[in-house]
Image 1 (cartoon, helix red, strand yellow):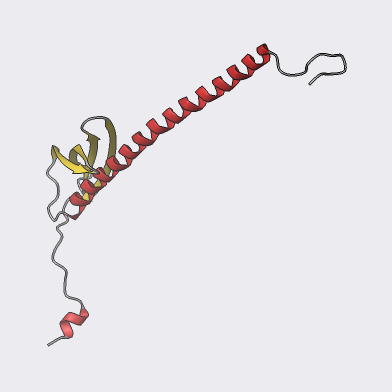
Image 2 (cartoon, rainbow, N blue to C red):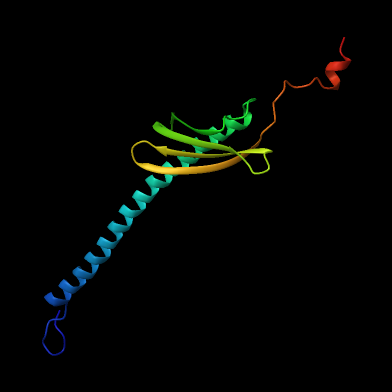
Length: 139
């Protein structure tokens, strides 16, 4: 298309190169952002499963009729299709009424640790459920 002065109108080669370089920089930034997001998503998924491992261990400790033995212990388990190592450290609180248990779990290959601290009464022993009023009235 020609203008009034007889010159063709359009983009010059330099303008096209500048536009392509700006577009390339924006595309590279988006690709790097996608890689960062993917990496963080995988790490977050491992942390969620690690929290599940420590919570499962805490439930086992809280529902066991025997209090946990004092000192350090560790073990392995499978959760979420991965092998996890857990460790726990149990000690009496200063008052002596509670056992404080610090639990840590970590995936064996890539890490992603999780920790949880629970308190359990030191002298509690879970008994069998007592019969309720309905059980007493039956012949």
